[in-house]
Image (cartoon, rainbow, N blue to C red):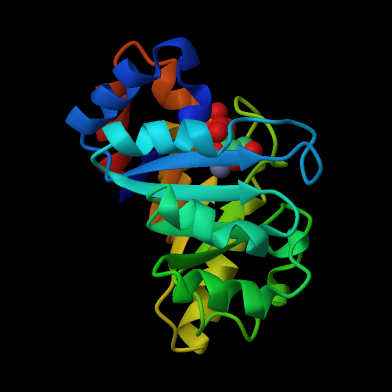
Length: 214
Ligand code: DX5
Ligand code: ZN
């Protein structure tokens, strides 16, 4: 299992310490939640902060853009060192052009969908993208309760990917802990994002290992 701890739950006054902890941990990726206060009712952090993170992080930077018109920021995201750029289907005027721009910039392209968005919007995209990010909470905030219907969505997506003959990573974000993570692993998730579960744990390093071994 790929584990992508979300820095949204880190201590922003001591971000360097939390990044060092992740560098030394078994996590493969670091998840960056970028919000604009328009697509989601919250604002997190922007490019200057991500640039500083890039200087310290020795893991794959997994950027999750919760902003409208993310195509405008593809080069900025790449210049901040992200290797994966995931955009919301609902936030793009032209999803195909956005995917193309992300790939042309040299990043892996991900598409995320909110819990209420039907999976079939992904039809026709699966052969063009590297990753689908299934939101298992409404995006915007850490620490929310996992929506159990997400399990069915992972199972259905898995079979859509198989039918399309595509090679796409299934990542899930929101309310992931050892219980929900185990259900997601069983359903076929390849990567799990976890914010509060990791950073509120007595041992974040151990919480990461627990998720990795699901
Ligand atoms: C929410 C973000 C998540 C968030 C997850 O909009 O996309 O990545 O950090 O937090 P937890 O794991 O606490 O639900
Ligand atoms: Zn996220």
